[in-house]
Image (cartoon, rainbow, N blue to C red; front, side, top):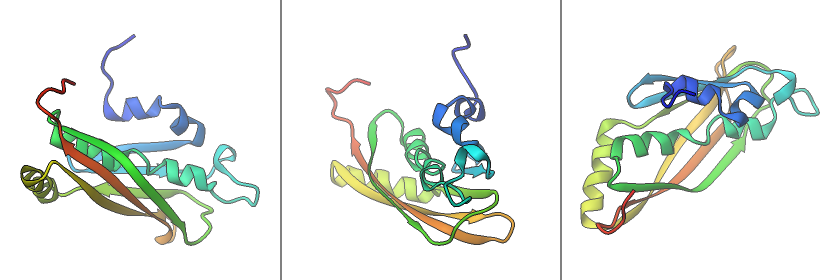
Length: 152
């Protein structure tokens, strides 16, 4: 078995994503997009996208981006999440996750003054065919500098 997978390969093998037909791609070092077609495996009782799958397509990416850019001297954990379902989704949906380099620099700068912070990120889930926002997701990430005595 290979020891290293590309970003897209790793997520294409991730069980919750394959089960719900969720796909993702890296747009640039600071941006990831996930998308999901409506298929029987992610359809709810009334024929629209299952809410759990809509949330799943958004769950890991802000944490992943922040961990990747802050590096091993920081600990990043999901602390809280919410999703507001605005309209039923009946076609392919997508969500874009972006953390600008300046925001990452600001987080690092703030953590030189204090040991931990709670960072809020949000995104919209959009039905691609019409550009309609079907859900809004907000994530709160706990971020702190790793103590000197803590090893990976």
